Image (cartoon, rainbow, N blue to C red; front, side):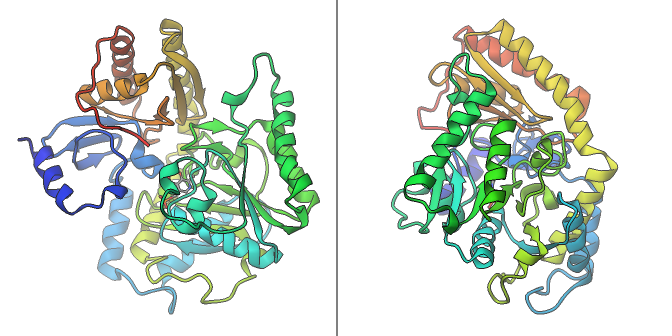
Length: 438
Ligand SMILES: Cc1ncc(COP(=O)(O)O)c(C=O)c1O
């Protein structure tokens, strides 16, 4: 039995199965930049970046040093009672990095999920309205509030209800729903008419506190909102006193080739949630919002003992340094062009297998036709030493660490090309018949 198998066998005796989405049997031992090594010493190129929480790569030396120094100084004293210098100085830094030239305030949390719960609390408190609108296909997290906002898997709702009341999901303007020969403007208008239908019939707009959207839906398949739809939505919110909020947990910190995915639209949201890569994967999240909204609640409306832990905020300071100094957003944009070129070429070679390529920086969704074919591709990649997962069973998720070298990227392309070829030729069989993926 391999070390990987030993560890997984032992783990299975004590692990609740709800906590891991099943892909393949591998145990990560260590990582460096865009490379990972398993318990048996096999090397992998990482095209998942720990679900986009490792934009700075694995164990970036600057982040490691900041964590070590802070751990020696103070591991934790809860900011719920007393300030500490590392956490205090992060708040303004985050506020300044968020879009919008207006005063902002920040509430820290431990995970993206609780940041989205915070969003519900503050939006309701500030507007004194109950309804929150989110979108189908979205993943916003796993707490009661954030899973109620989500619309991507029955496994997140089954047997756990009732969920939070007064959260309404509208149809996401997903390009997969576009009709043949439909222009982007016509598609946006058609989908926005679907958005208005509940508003005109049973959902009073003056009772809607907030609309929450991902500018590029991550777990929904790396799908960007059409520009015209986004502006229809934003204008509607502006006209009706509804807060406009974005979830940048998956897409922020340079992932999409800009600092924030909403930067593609030139819109400054009233509220924004961040997490994942903010502290290079250390547990930290935040709700950032217009100061007046963030002043709508007093303590203890949103406190957690460990949120704003100084080791995590030291990691966040170092992460922000790396994102700035290594120009990760620009790097993502330029390497993303190489990736787009590669996948489009592969699509020409295998038009029956690859049916769509969406790439925004190093942030890609690749549509794969044929039942089980996407799983076969990621299985073949796993054999070849590449970590990649699927979304919605039919979409390849391409999100490498933004520090990936050009050489590593080209090596990944070589292995991807091999996997496409082998799957197109019908040569790949997945040994386990268990369901894999979401
Ligand atoms: C867009 C988005 N929002 C929220 C979350 C939840 O974040 P966390 O898993 O840190 O609670 C995720 C996680 O995948 C996400 O992709």
